[in-house]
Image 1: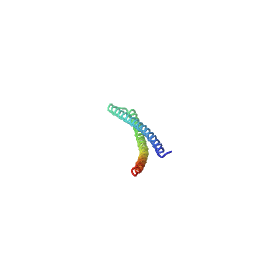
Image 2: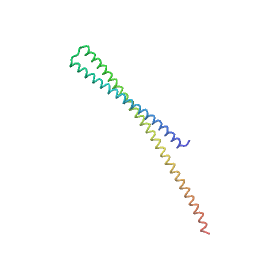
Image 3: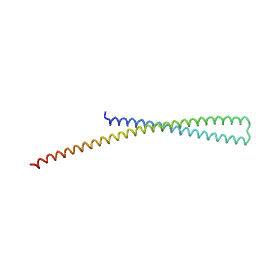
Length: 151
């Protein structure tokens, strides 16, 4: 297997790894948006429920209902904290996936650079070979023409 084909194979593998990392990153970002939307919905629900408690307190509320409101708000607060923790965790996964994608992109770029250099080297070598052949043919013509002049 030639060096060029090995570089091409490594480039293909790096491209596949980068694409897989990109798909993982896209999935993690989608999950992050879903978790953030759930957190927003839960926050909005807690706000509305707290407003209902305020309205009930203005209208007069018995102690048992007040206790139930407070208990439910406490459970909503706990759920909100869990949702914030989940969002933080998901954001960390997104960041890790982003870093993985960037590493794979760098690896691919390195192989592409090596491949480009190798191709440029081969083209330069081929151009030198063609120039040498051309020079040899011209020198051969000159040598053939010289004896004709000398006679």
